[in-house]
Amino acid sequence: MPRIVSIYLPRWPIQRFLVAQSNAPRSLDTIDAHYPFVLTVDAAGGPRIAAASKPAEIEGLAAGGLVADARAKVPGLQTRPAMPEADARALHRLGLWAMRYTPSVALYREADGADGLFLDVTGASHLAGGEQALLADIVKRLRHLRLGARVALADTPGAAWALSRFHAQNGTVIAEDGDPGPVLADLPLAALRLGEATVQTLRRLGFTRIGDLIGKPRAPFAARFDAILLKRLDQAMGRREEALALIEPPPLYHRSRQLLEPVVSQAAVVHVAARLMQDLVPALVAGGVAARALQLRLFRVDGEVRTIHIGLAAATRDPAHIARLVELDLERLGETIDAGFGFETISLTATVTEKFGQRQSRLSLKEGRRDAPPADAAERRAELIDALRQRLGPGSVQRLHPVARHDPTFAEEARDAADPEPTWPAANGSQQRPPLFLDQPEPLQILATSPEGLPDHVRWRGSSHRIIALQGPERIAGPWWEAAPPALPDKPGKEEYGWGKMGEEAPALPDSESPKSQKRNRFEDGEATRERAVLLPAPTRQDYYVAETQSGQRFWLCHDGRQNWSLRGLLA
Image 1 (cartoon, one colour):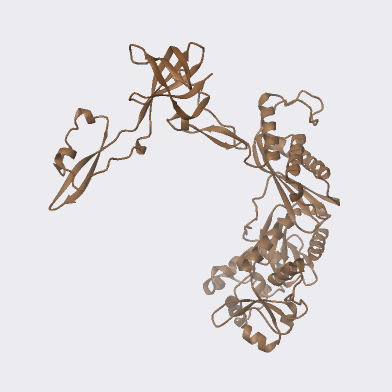
Image 2 (image 1 turned 90 degrees about the vertical axis):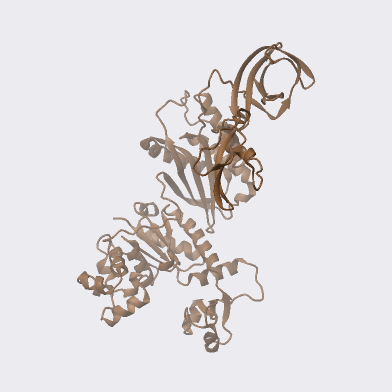
């Protein structure tokens, strides 16, 4: 059975506001937490209370009441506008903080109150010394962050939610593994996450506790109430699965360490990262994969979380290589990776993996040493790319990838070096492509031509070159859709567009227009509907030649179909 922790934060918007205020410089309008205080929201009929502090609740104020009535009841009531977006962002940051215990963390949905967290700690509680120690540690750390919380542990999210809100008055409660019915039986119906109208109707029928519904025939409830009633009951009892909307997808390969003493030095962080990667290697080997991207999270004592993303040019399982990349990234970040009072928990997750065959990657017996030579040039190149990216930042290193375009000058584009290795099309001996294209075509001056009209002697950049061999042509046409149509008159004449009646074939074009495409368009002209054949210019085409000069140079020449020759690239 799964084990789910529910962290309920009573009066979360109030707590979030007071914690943010305590972290800001003190001012004259600072809220006094010991005097009634409410957050307000604009509504029909005037501002209403969105959340109330504990002193305000003691005075009888509650969410939903009119602010005007509250001011009459409590003179000097402190008010501030509610900030639901700031509350949501802060709860998300708290969810990242909770990942020190497990990578499977979800926020309460809006229907559940949006004031707490779910933690799936199945198989992870022993890392904190057991379930009781885990809950105690959560409460202690949240109290250190000046957040009061009620924490419960059960087999289902519904049961954990109910216990944290209506049973964990003293901080923590644990439901034993098994049937949650006995521990839920005495809780009120609101613990099933039902709407107020449904709860009131059940009360009028004599049902006040969850135990009153357990074991009763289901048909009358299904006929009288919406399906949500039986759904919530089944979810709480574990008879129906309830999926959690996790902050991040649950990783397959994840390791974390809670340190006995917080670390602040770069060397200590690198050392722990290497140890975590070593712990990941057996799981990666068992899965037949290697890491292609990793995520290192550093959890500070004050609750802040620092994340380092490690992208790899090639999949690896090498802890020494990962440690080197972490070191380079920390050097690049410098002061921005402020450790504060230290990092107390560090986790490493393989976010992207690839299939990785068994191979001997190093000849050295000292596998972990950084100076052990890589097995081949591909691995050396990948390590160089990784080091440059971590040192210079994401997107700083790029390499070319092929693009399916007819024009070879546009048949490649630069992408991030961490993207998968490009697969280039097989070389065609009859279609040679230069490894170096010029930024712009450079015109050639033709000094002499052969009897066939091909260049025999050219001038380029002030120097003359005699051509001794010419291979080609290779004709490359541009895309037909890039050809712009000619401007059309409002009422073209028959001599221009070949008029005909609708349903008749368009007249044949003259030979001089044969390379151009035809397009038939209909329009209404006065009394009759006519049809016309519109002439569109054909896509531009160019002829390419590989020319070898007397001095041994090889040029990639282009002829535009008129009388213009240009140099487009240089071949080896």
